[in-house]
Length: 338
Image 1 (cartoon, rainbow, N blue to C red):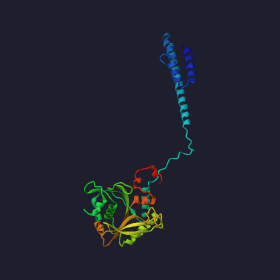
Image 2: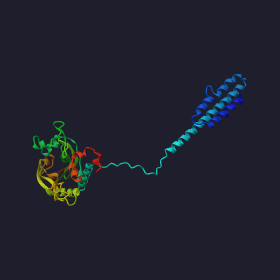
Image 3: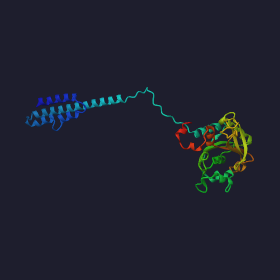
Image 4: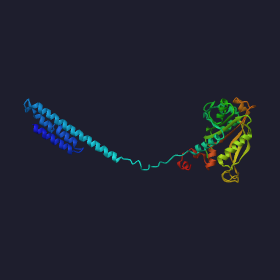
């Protein structure tokens, strides 16, 4: 029996050494299974003398352990080789150039807004923002637009309640600033505004404005003109000229519409300016004394000017875009041009 056990060990170890991943389990069953060769030999231990049984039993256990250890070692070797093959197959050459991904770019409205902010920050203005859901007081009353004022009819405002609305202009930011900041004040307030306009090529119920405010002692219409001239030259080119046309706004007096000389034809007349040589760009004026008083500023001591422009309009003029709806349709063909 001892010789038989030794033969089984040698045969098993040789089989394991020559085995593949697929045959290891078969070898284990052949030698160590319930009907395996080692088990079959051990069933004959009943014919041994009491003195022989412990020795054969110990030898059988040693052989079982050696076979199990050999199988475990073979499994580890197989796993190591499989891992090596996998790592080799998945090896990445870090020196190879990567695949170029398409880069995004800034939306034209955002680009123009940032350009505008940079221009006015360069002139000493501070950027201030405010809530888009606003009180009627800040959107109208404090700006010298009381109830039943005709200007309210032209606003087509989105009301949430009788006293709460979506702001129709960024002017409420100016009021809030004057309430909490003492002159001198020099701010711009860019942001989204809402009006109940029918959507077409030049109107949208949502659009963007940038308004400016300066309040200090001795501020005149000349300061307003100089500020807007500087803005126009930086935005449209050094040869740009501006002109004021009399107008009416409830919150400024005197008020004016401001035109810039056409930056395409230089004022000679072309398709962009419709042959007039001038393009309307914004509204402006001197802050109405009532507005200053409403905000706790003495109009006898201080004066100021304000202006407001549509960011979509400036973008359309400067980029040659003829339909405001293109800004909001997310058409990749349109956006890729910028």
